[in-house]
Image (tube, rainbow, N blue to C red; front, side):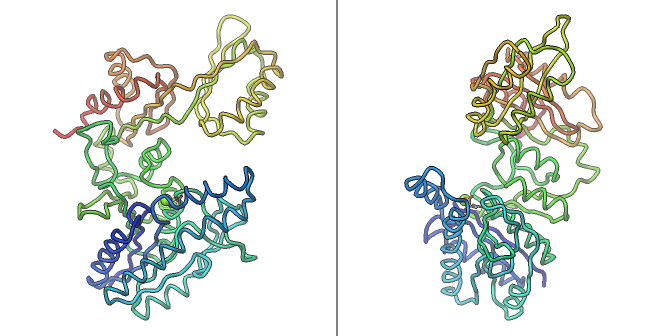
Length: 405
Ligand code: ASP
Ligand code: MG
């Protein structure tokens, strides 16, 4: 008998019919003789709706009260799922995060899990019950309720799998697994059977939107096997796991495109030591995360400097960029919101050469202009015009032979 953690996302429990479907899935696993801990998200779009409600009361809600509010969503789903399982004649008991000892730091709305006391869950399991745990929430040492950031139920599930030494953490969602590209953009995108934590992390942060990035980081750190699969069918899903040598035989695992960034260019930046440091210090002080940065030495005494930020940070960036321009005596700046970042990801890049030139060649053949380039060991990203995003994904998907044969 092994212990399995299963997590069901908001769309999998969007209405009573789907909750009954989840209950049947859970009971199926239980009947195979496994011990089961089930983590659930709030029903459908509940979290968004709660955020919207708050915004009708105030523009600046206290973060503590936001956590009080948002944590109610998951409390509804655990109770309903427990009832649905009991209705099928099986023992189940629901718990909030605080009830099962999910201890976090004090960072309201984006708390980190510090420790999990699993006694209460173990007790329930010993009695033969299915333990249903509210995702996305925990409590501080002084018993304040916290939430773990959007998509945080994934984190609850992976952290519980680690704490309970589960055999696997299964993430149930409304897609069949992780794909070589977004199937809505590329018709012949293929479901992957296997992907490494690092590849998944790159794809998650690139906007593949299958799993919360932090949960994958925790999975990697503690080597928790994560299986992403559909709650609507029995397809085998995608296993996220540690890298094995044979993964390098595949050059590129996936292609992603992201429209969530904007590009800022500062013109006529004096070319002397300390300038970049001053610009990015002023921006960092506004809590803005900068992604790509490009600067190039020219023969003149000034250079242009471009960087990208997430659109969610754009307002704050624009509010402070004038100050940075004045501080270094640059000539001015420009902002471009109609960009896309297209990226190819694969651990095979480590041991193969010519990947970048192949990528650039494919884009050139489609007459797609490259604005910025950045690379990591297992990823190459290009900033291009937003209108070319879809074409770029398709041509790269084909170029690297990712489609169905
Ligand atoms: N309900 C929360 C959210 O929508 C947590 C989750 O779904 O994982 O972000
Ligand atoms: Mg959700």
